[in-house]
Every structure is written in C-alpha cells, then in structure tokens.
Amino acid sequence: MGMTITEKILAAHSDRSEVSPGDLITAKVDLAMANDVTAPLAIKILEKHGIDKVFDPDRIALVLSHFVPAKDIKSAEQAKVVRDFVRKHGIKYFFEEGEGIEHTILPERGIVVPGDLVVGADSHTCTYGGIGAFATGVGSTDIAYAMATGEIWLRVPESMKFIFYGKLNPWVTGKDLILHTIGHIGVDGALYRAMEFEGETIRELSIEQRLTITNMAIEAGGKSGIIAPDEKTIEYVKQRAQREWKVYESDPDAEYHSVYEWDASKIEPLVAWPYLPSNVHPVSESTHIEVDQAFIGSCTNGRIEDLRLAAKILKGKKVHPNVRCIVIPASKSVYMQAMKEGLIDIFMEAGCAVSTSTCGPCLGGHMGVLAEGERCISTSNRNFPGRMGHPKSESYLANPAVVAASAVMGRIAHPEEVIREKELVGA
Picture 1 (tube, rainbow, N blue to C red):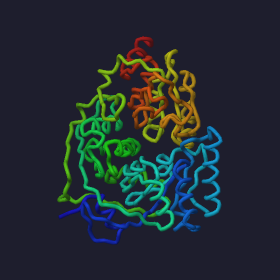
Picture 2 (tube, one colour; picture 1 turned 180 degrees about the vertical axis):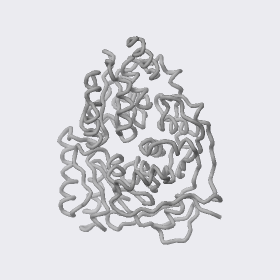
Picture 3 (tube, rainbow, N blue to C red; picture 1 turned 135 degrees about the horizontal axis):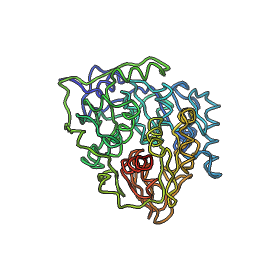
Picture 4 (cartoon, rainbow, N blue to C red; picture 1 turned 60 degrees about the vertical axis):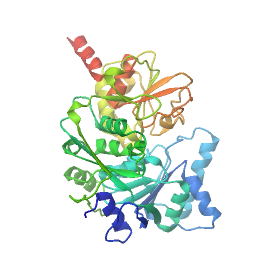
C-alpha cells in the first residue's frame, strides 16, 4: 500500500521506510519556530531544567509578531526575553518587530522549503504546507523540547483529501475554497488529520493563495494542511530557498480517511459569520449586515496579492464614514512592494489606516481592538467570541475583495457592487 505525502515526509524524518496512521514516532525537525507570545514560555522551561544549549541555532526561528510594536510594559518585557535568548545562543533567524508575521516571513525568505518538517509554537504553523512541507503547531513545552533536542514526538495523522475542479468565478479566491471546506466539514471535521488539497483548481492558484488555504487547516481541527509541490512551487522556492529541498507527493494507491470533491465554479465569495469559521454563508446572503471596522491583513491574507486585490476595489473610492478600515501588510517586504506599486497611496487616499507589520487586530491584541457591540469584517482566520476584542463584539471572515467592498459600502458587500458603482460614475 502506498503512502500519502504527509506519511512520506514523516517517515523520512523518523528514519523509517514507511509509517502508517496511528504510529507513534520521534521525528527530526528541520525548523522550530516561536513568537513573542510563545517563545518566552519555552525559554523559561529551558531555564527551569538547566538547559543552556540549543540543538542548532541555525534551525530555530524566533519572530516578534503578535504584540508589536510593543503595546505595553508586559509585551516589551516578553520581547526582551526573546532578544536576550537570541543573543545568548546566536539564533540565526531572528526577526524584530516590524519585520512581519512568521507565517509570511518564513516561506517568503526561503527559510521553510518543500519536504521540511516544521514545528511552531503557533497554531497557524500549518501555513507552510502550502509549499509542500509538513508543518504543525505545538505548545511551548513541545517547542522547548524541539529547541533543545531537534526532535518532536508525533502520532502519524490520517489524511483527508479535498479535490477542487472547475474555474473560479470572479472575486473568488483561495480564502473562499478553505471557507467552503470548513463550512462543509465543520471546525472539528479534520481533527488531528492532515488535510491534503489537490485538483485543477488548486493547481491554477498562486502560491500565496495556496498558503491561505493551508493556513486555515487548523480551523477545521486539522493537524496540518498540505499541497503537493508542482512547477509553480519550485519556481517560487528556487528564488528564495536558503537550503536544499525535497519534493514528495502521494502515491496513487495511498489510503485516505475520506475524500471530498467539489466544483469550484459553483462557489461564490463566502463570509463566515460569528462565532465559528464554519458558519459560512454566501456574500449574497450577507449584504444586510452593517460593519464598524474592516481589517485587511494577517497571516491569512496580508500578502502582496491580497493587497493588490483590495486596492483594486478601493482605488478612487472612499471608506464609508461609519467604518474604520485598517490595512496591515503581513511583512516588511510586502509593505515595501505595496509602496512601490502605489497601493499604500490608494489605501490612504481612500481613508484607510495603514500600519507596520503585526498580527495586532487579528487576535484582539492592539491596533484595531473592537468595543462591545461592534462588528468587523476581516481577512483573518478566526471569529470566536472575543477573538478581535470585546466578547460581545462580532467578527466576520472574508477574502480581501469582499472586505474592501464592505469598507466602502458600510455593510458586507459583494465586490461587484463597488465595481458597478465605479463604472456608473466613470460613464
């Protein structure tokens, strides 16, 4: 019996010829990652046990991303703990505040490559599966162990396959494909399973949109999300990779827990209503919902393609007077590219607040926290109670074009509503 791409990567990293779902393995990690929230906890664990040496300073990435620029004394002290650790151990991959969000930086700079096994003390570590790596989120205790030993204990997950075929409709993106998936199987429909995406629709997507899909595998309970590398992946990686990579793909006779197949041409832009990412509705059924804030950014949809899509809607328009629109590029390089292309001018002329790279509003951290009773439409990944601020606020999830259109209209809106208005004014 053949193996899935996930099983092949895990077998290779545990020095086995094969593995099967349910096997307990100790695997070597290619990279261990933590951020300004989770790294200090791991560092304290290492210090508590008297461990004063990491397994390889070139295989650890630490990123200040969540509460940066530091919003208060506590967040400043957490960042200092990380900085001191980096200097003490000579950590190669350290990213200061303003550099960006880890899940954008690491693929963007070629620090994660296909075939890797990556563990990160952040649930959205599964993002890296978009370029064919096995990547999963773990707790701070596990990341401390990985930083000390270069290994991680895992149970080999079952795999689920999601096949999309057909041509996407205008304004439909990878974000809508993953919302469609989560809406269908639920927030625990892939619990501790590897979510493998394939099909002609997936192959037509850019790498950035593939990363959006795998980013939200955790919202279905997935252990990981993964897309087998193809020529687009290799073209993306070879311009960035800082080390060798290896391409894996599933065998034709690999076994799956379940297989889903959908016609993507029947999917319209989608919106996840509170308070679950699985509470998915077509945008056409959501246009009665007024919003107070629109957020374009996060590790899910803060890349350059996302900003281009939002700018296409906002160009020549104004944000509704009752709406705050916040735009946060997901990395410094994305921000700089957006400046070169004039996207930042478009956002600011429309009345948006543009901020340095940070997770900020996504987790209700700062730079866009919601008050009681307020509603936000966001390109981020979670909409649980209190996720973006007050427990009685509401967050709606959508793709960047829908969020930008909603910022203009003052309510959840289909991008075509703004485009038609532009055409009428132009006529």
